[in-house]
Image (cartoon, rainbow, N blue to C red; front, side, top):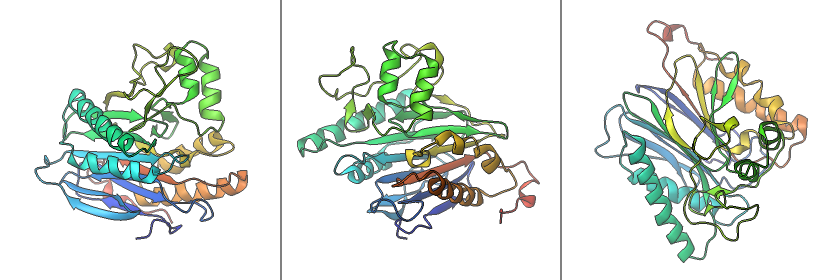
Length: 329
């Protein structure tokens, strides 16, 4: 399937411990970017992987994958740099080779090693590029393992609220780490205003840990945000942590094309009404979400619209409920 098709791509995964669906669109309105620099990876409980290669859906059976173990990831190639799509694709290829991990230390070590290898590879080729990476490693029992780099986000959504689960690696966060922004100022700059500048990317490296306002160079190492260096108003939102997946919530992983709007909160605040619908399939919910996104882009004159990739994750309905689930029309 051509990902440049405005209809996008939705992939359901059945017969697995979690309900998962993904959609990737080059341009939600069909009048935005011509290249999809986003990517994603879903590995289901049987070891079947689905991702994009040359903007095309690709499926692969992974050998020796633990039954019931799952992995989901969203990646966004750096749009201001050449080879952003290639950076995201090479990261996915590395994720396909990464063994299933059952603890934070293992997944962090594996992803740090992948980052270092790809950093050296791209630097040797003279390419200063990278991608965001937000990944959930989901063992068959126990909480999910979250790993986050960049400004793609994870959200938890229920009927009452939308809760952001990650901290964007952007200049405002660097200022907050230095004590130069309070909570209200940080929220205004990160979640209310529109900004495309990031301070850390997978493959490229980081300026987040610089001691002053301006970094002299990009550090090749990733800078992990955790409760030891985050300001009080961001505590509990570390980049690498355990994340229990609760049945009453829907979990959304997305590139920033989903909220790259003139007034992003006006759209985000509608997500509970759009997505907290247990009777609807995830594919139907993605239909609603992307239709609403395209309409919002038109209303807010937020052009050009960006690549947008969304993964929805949900615990299955209780026995007997699934028979009553109907797709929204």
